[in-house]
Image (tube, rainbow, N blue to C red; front, side, top):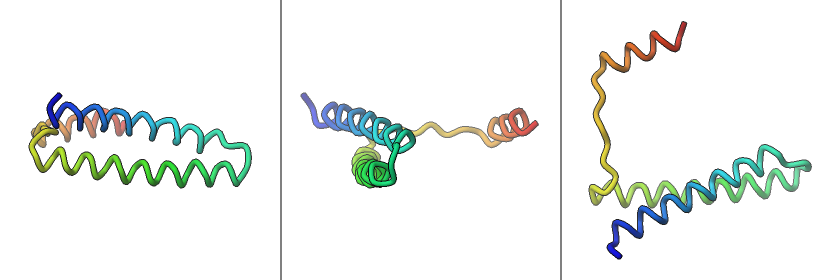
Length: 80
């Protein structure tokens, strides 16, 4: 398996963990549990950001450029 494939799998895994921690934070029944999930979420988000940055540096996370006209059209559509 190539490095790119491993990084993609790792990124997907960390995104899934972030999702679980987010829901744990939202649904917490006590302040202590909320804090524990929130701290775990923040650590996971930092890891996700590092993986993303590494992939972007290597050109493994391509970005699509969108024309400003399309952005403006969507802004108008959803601001009403």
